[in-house]
Amino acid sequence: MEVLLLRATLAPLLILLTSIAAHRLGPRFGGRLLGLPLSTAPFLVILCIEHGPQAASDAAHGAALGQLTVVTFCLLYARLAVKARPLKALPIAVLCGAIAEVVVVLTHSLWLTAIAIVTAVAGAVAWSSTTADAPPQPGRGSRWDLPFRMAVSGAVVLILTTTAPLLGPVVAGALSALPVLLIVMAPSVHRATGGEAAASLMYGALASAVGTITFVLVLSMMLVPAGPWAAFALALGGMAAVDTIVRAACRMRPRLEVSGYFVRQRDRQRSAVG
Image 1 (tube, rainbow, N blue to C red):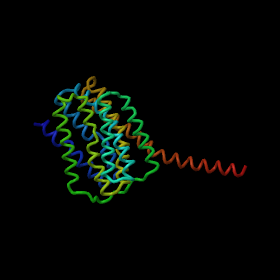
Image 2 (cartoon, one colour):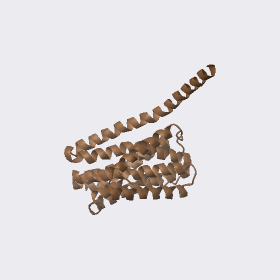
Image 3 (cartoon, rainbow, N blue to C red):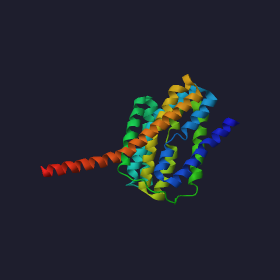
Image 4 (cartoon, helix red, strand yellow):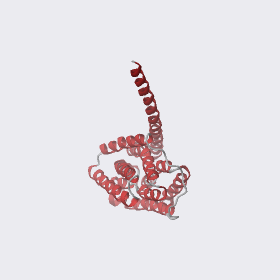
């Protein structure tokens, strides 16, 4: 009964809290929250309780592979959102993300996860110096958006934990990483507050993707040797540390560009005097 209650309530509760925070603090912060393992973490917790650390470790490996799908979707939707409407941007981004998911499931290559890490960092840092976050605005979306997102998140966790024995933990883990919540949230923000806000949401998710990848990689390596409590503590600590580094890099990029501008101006002045 306790596990069933956990399945039904944990992910929707996380979505409720993050949606409230995103509404108050803006799309970039909302994207950073949605980039966290809000569906994957509850899925791994439940899988560990029901099937043991080894199954959860294999699923975490699959979730690490599936992060390439998240990065692919976020980058494409961000680029398309400023030029196209949701009905055009969403299918293209979803299709490319689906292709990435098929590739990682077939290859099981962690090199693709490394590519996802590099791409996420590069995209988040580059965006931080070129785009300002859209301010929080009252949404013009449907009043059913939040209940729908909560229902989707709960359904994803229920379906994956139920079908994990049939799919295998690695495939189930890869599917748990699908950006279902971002797919639901992106067109909602796009319609309500415009393409720039949707792009800000996506780049915020990219900034959190590196921490999420760290979280699932640590779990995949430590769940069996260290046990669930220690493994989850290490994974959360690693995610927090990596997220801090990424945020520092995002803040540093604009400062470096400003410093470089003044250096170039000084060099031009010296050349003119000489």
